[in-house]
Length: 123
Image (cartoon, rainbow, N blue to C red):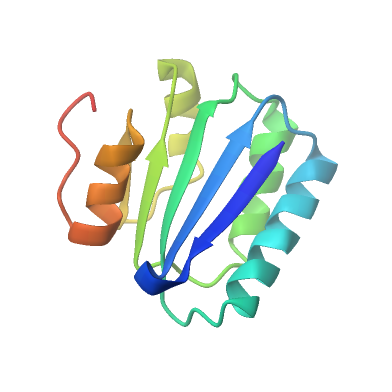
């Protein structure tokens, strides 16, 4: 399951992923994400991705997500909100950009993408 919200005044894309995702859902998610960003006419944007409600995913899903996200325009800042340490390790493979940070709360992630405030260790 996924949910995509666009906060146009802040040029912020907020994504929530939950549950086990199939490769087909990844395809649909990334296509929808690109469409929503294009539709909002965001030439530059920050992105907050909350995966705290996702269990560890299949390797096929991780590979598909990694390949599909390469098709996207680059965000100026990216925060990934994680739950378990295993999920955090898994998503670190996908989000290796120098402007990406990992946090345990949406607030810390939002502070990073909107204000450049580094998430505290373990946050």
